[in-house]
Picture 1 (tube, rainbow, N blue to C red):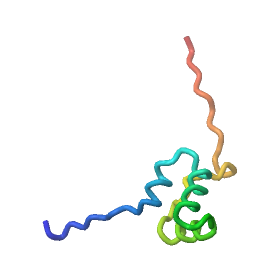
Picture 2: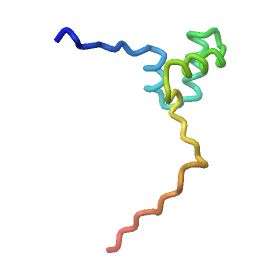
Picture 3: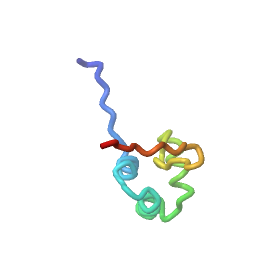
Amino acid sequence: MNNIIYINKDPILIELENSVDKKSAKRMIAFKYFNSNETLLNEYLDKNNSNDTGFINRSSVEPKAQLEFSF
């Protein structure tokens, strides 16, 4: 059991992942940790997290048909 590696997650990534409004959370995190510099936050997220924002590109999502129930 000595070969187990424990990964401590970064508090910045935890805050961003747990947020509902990602845009507001990024502004708050930039203020809290990066002296209100969002470009530094984006650079940090690019280095430390592959899917940093959780945003969905709306142009790449195909609309789904609505499910209808026949009674």
